[in-house]
Image (cartoon, rainbow, N blue to C red):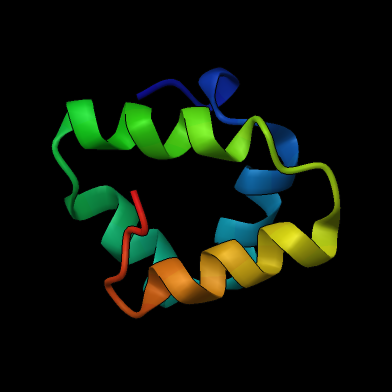
Length: 62
């Protein structure tokens, strides 16, 4: 997956959260795309951090 595909706020949140980055990297490409599409609708850093923290626990919420 090309870094350019990731929204900047999602990329930054993953950089700050190693557990979430690990979870994201384990996903099959189809699920990764679903997560990326969800993150495109998140506008604030706070909301993104909440999503990534939830995601880091293995909860996709999709």
